[in-house]
Every structure is written in C-alpha cells, then in structure tokens.
View 1 (cartoon, helix red, strand yellow):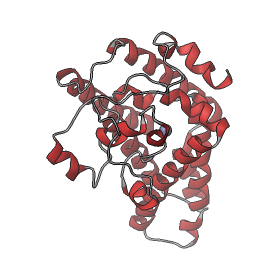
View 2 (cartoon, rainbow, N blue to C red):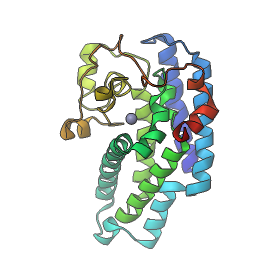
View 3 (cartoon, rainbow, N blue to C red):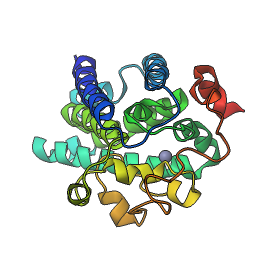
View 4 (cartoon, protein in one colour):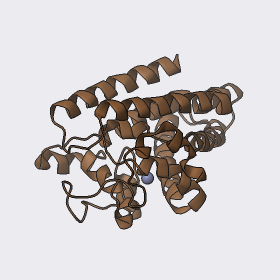
Length: 259
Ligand SMILES: [Zn+2]
C-alpha cells in the first residue's frame, strides 16, 4: 500500500512537471526529452529492484518494526505522536542534506553520486537519475536512523513523498518569475536554486545541497544564490564527462563508478 501511495504521488508530480517543461522549457538541451525520460525511468526501475532485493521493505518497514517493538529514542521518551512526526520529518531532511555533502566529499561515494551530476541536461527526469549503489547506501542510512530514533511510519512515508515531489520540482527545466522565485526560495528549494548545484564549476557544484527546504544551506553556509555565468549561460554537468552518447547509456551509467 505504501508503494502505491508513493508511486501515485510521484507520477502525479512527474506528469505535472513534464507538462510545465513541455509548455515553457527554460533551456533547450541537445538530447531528446523522450530518450532522457526513458533512460532515467529505466534506471529508476532497476534501482527499485535493487532496493527490494538488498533492503527489503526499506525505511517504512523499519519504522513499522520499530513501532511494533517500541524501539528507538522517541518510543523510549514516549513523545506524543505529533512531536514524533515533526521530529522525524526534520531529522530525516537534515540527515539527507548531510548525506549529500558526504557523497560529494568522500571520493568513493562521489563516484556513485557522479552518475547524477554527469547529466548534460537538467530537467525533472534528472531527479531520478541515481546509481543503485547510492540508493541502497542511502536506504541503509535511513533504516539505521529510523530504528535508532523510532521514527513513526507516517513520518517516513510523508518524508519520502515530500522528498520525491520536491526533487522533481527543483530539477525542473522551468523558470519561475523572479519576484515569485525570491519569495518561494525562502521556504522551498526552487529550480533556480538547485540548478546552481548542477553547474560544472566545482565551487558551484559544492553548494546548495538541500533537496526540499533551503534552511540547512542557509544555516550551514552552503547556500549560493546564483551561478557566476547566469542561469542561461552556465554549463550543466561535469567538465570531464561531456560525451552526449555515453551520457544517456544505461550500461555506461551503471559502470561509471567503477571506471
Ligand atoms: Zn550533488
């Protein structure tokens, strides 16, 4: 049931973003949109199979287990449900922000995360372009956190739905009018803010690590307002990987961390 809810929300936001990008794309990329979407969806399905195989029911099932056995700090402290949900959402979001920094800083982990960053385009489909190794490690990390804190299942499910929706939105190849964009980015990571993170300039790649709220970037000093060359001229991707053919080869993406 949790998979059905997650998938329905994901597809609804993906379709909305595809329609928005189709109507008013911010930038034109050389790659076909359909090819990008099919390769990235293929990678997502492969990741889903790997996650099922290597982490079972994942963080949601870990939360159900923690609830049944009453394990984890929140159960120990007998916090009211609303507080458990709030703490769970905040801790998980900050944990994913920290995980993102670690995947950039540790060379072996960066090899996995690079699959996301070598994308020569930047659109909603980029949000699902991750190496299965990164997905599985991230799931183990979330399972450990959920068990240690006893995060409620509803908080885990809501967090994953919100995270997926935010990632699809902030990778969108769209532009929000400036006056609205500045107000919105105080609360939510906008495509303009996250696009900076996909710049080929290393100082820009190593900024704006958040996936949903900009708060952690503001507080931890990793916020960067705009790319040096401007949004229309900035180079997307990484300077060392610019072959458009291998960039969309599923086999190449899976092997990239080992080459
Ligand atoms: Zn990154």
